[in-house]
Amino acid sequence: MSVIGYARVSTDQQSLAMQTDALNKLCDEVFQEKVSGAKRDRPQLKLLLNKLNEGDTLVVYKLDRLGRSLSDLIDIVRELQAKKISFRSLNENIDTSSAMGKCFFHMVGAFAEMERDVIRERTMAGLAAAKLSGRTGGRPDKFKSETIELAKELADQGKPRTEIAKSLGMSRATLYRMLSETKSLNR
Image 1 (cartoon, one colour):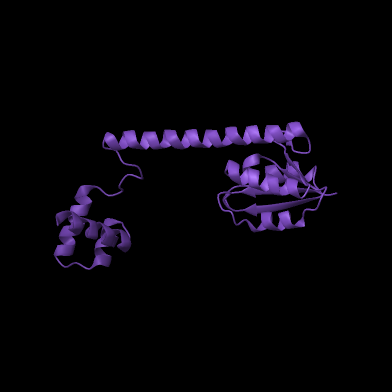
Image 2: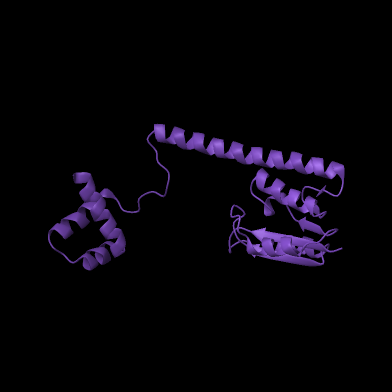
């Protein structure tokens, strides 16, 4: 009977250290990967799930490391239970080897999904309110309208695009984008 850990972060900039430190204390082996949990294709998780046998235990640091949605988590844990494999989450103190642990897993998973849905609803409501008041998301424009007008005038005078971009401190791609947006606005 093996105890196998799974550690995951979503981006290369994030560190696995905190998860692996905790998992290495309990597990015989720890699988690690840097991939979004929203993706169903997680190669290390797939390898780990194929390696587990009856009587083994899968351990994660937090529930959201295993799956991003409640249905995904439940599917994985049901798959484990069908193979008589236990599941533990250290942060939420869940252990599905007991009836109480199974119940608690479902409750915590439901609350986690509800929290994500509430955050999503609040974000969408905030974006809608901002749109109604005339604000849009995204980074503010770097170049002022005077700079855009100057670029347009220089282009109309036949100056080379590379020279215009360099003199205004922008890339050629930015210049071309600004000029094409200006043309589409004037139509």
